[in-house]
Length: 86
Image 1 (tube, one colour):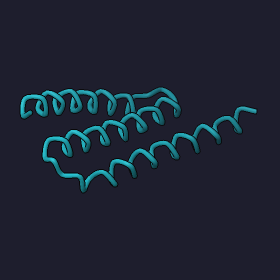
Image 2 (image 1 turned 45 degrees about the horizontal axis):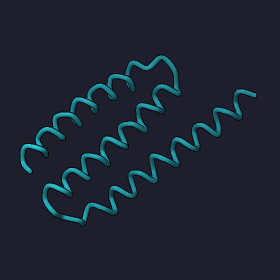
Image 3 (image 1 turned 180 degrees about the vertical axis):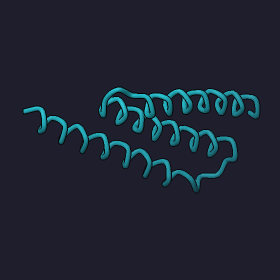
């Protein structure tokens, strides 16, 4: 199990670094919003890997909260972006 957790941590770290680059260097606001939403998903995935590794389920509400905040943030930005395009 330790090897799987280390591999997952390395992959999630690489994904986080690449996504942070997209957020910083993104040419448009929508690129940055997609990057931040991806960072939220990566953070939730990291918490899920930690929960599986440590057999500790107390972080599950945090995973749900991150998923909810990520979804609501993306939905709000896309709604205002559509309204601005008209």
